[in-house]
Image (cartoon, rainbow, N blue to C red; front, side, top):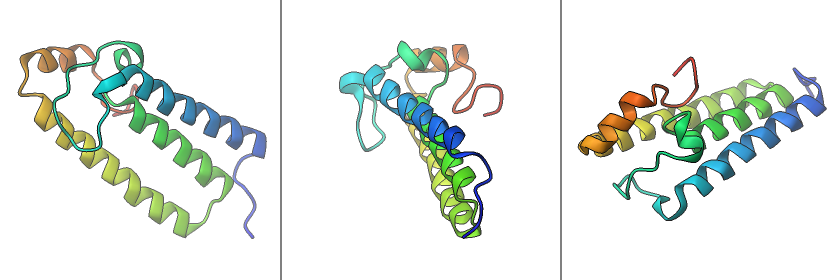
Length: 119
């Protein structure tokens, strides 16, 4: 078994933060949460003031924590594929939502899609 790339306390804390981001994002969405991309109203409060897809940000944080705890090539491959799917899904969601002028204004005001300062 390969040694963790980070101490267990750090990876557990990162996982907790990631989960908190996911839960906070879903709570911010309220009734607008859905499995398929669709326009269910624009949410601009809560975590959506910081990034346009905070739930996906939470998933990315938990995936990074898992990779730090279990740094295997297989884990990297699977999570890279999963994270690529998240980025694609976010793009598809935005393609649907940007048709709404209110969402276009929201997108202009909230610069970051997933990760503040990066993406």
